[in-house]
Image (tube, rainbow, N blue to C red; front, side, top):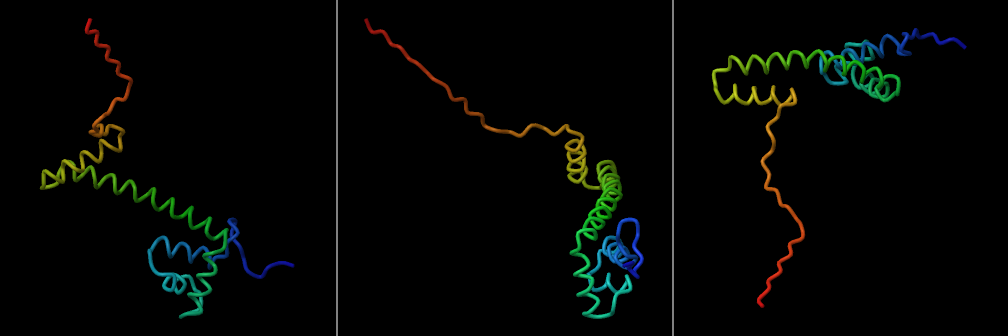
Length: 128
């Protein structure tokens, strides 16, 4: 029996894809995303969208989209930190941004710890 609802190569319907894309792109509520994706208006659309978001193939697509969005935004964040390190008005902000860059490059200063060395100590006193 063939489904009357078209599915994409990922196994999602166009509405499911639009729902996830609206959530990821806009960071809006499920209710607003359901409206943008063409689900029923009001509470019915929100409930249907909530159930849709629990489906494993929809969750997999959402994680993929979130990963892509985070990757893109990571480059923007890195650029901002570099800009702060070189041109922030506050020297404190410049210092913190510089430390953050060095930390991410693997050049973090060692943590200051008090080291205790345990071992066996023998004292032999000869009073003869």
